[in-house]
Image (tube, rainbow, N blue to C red):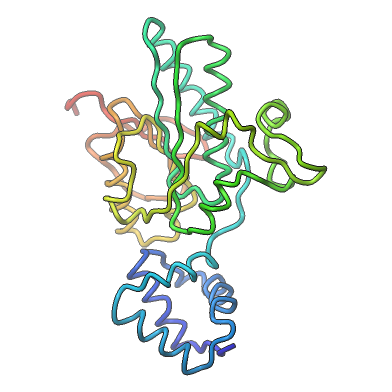
Length: 278
């Protein structure tokens, strides 16, 4: 395996950022950790040729490196504050649509291996079932990593990923394959789909407008100006009255004329205005 020196590491970082927007200048250990297995089996000359090729033109093969860089530290119900806000929003929508069928479209942008998307589905399902109203919901999860999307579609998780999930949700929506592994119950799984896409590519985002968009623990790996670019794109996919949730430390200083900042602990919440009034 080639020994990646400081200069090569910087060049790989530049390639990665140019093609995906991911900036790991402050996370050198993550890039090294991803490069090592990805370059396994290459000679120094082959690694240099691969790097030069990536610098000269967009290269689809770079996705293999992205898969090795994918953040694996995720779990169900990771940020309870976000799901409390989602529950409040769904309850309000149910109350507002008592005489009509409610349709809820939700998006987990940067879904990793799917835990967030499935938890969003569980939250909505619980409230809709208890309300006994005519309602339909669907969740789209998207991620730049093809390996993460493949894992999300399988819907199988080690028990340690479930440690933060309330027992009632675990018992209702997950089926134990053995003492250590669980899979998503089929009816809930049918409400969730996953696609591979890059948040920087507005054309790759869901074509329909969303009622709820979660984009948490993703923007931290983008430069400030790119964070604003991604967030502005997300607003264009948000229905009037819909909500956008992002991490508490992400998108610092970002504002949008179509959004109203809502109160929230440990998460930033924005609601899209229903009209053009400021």
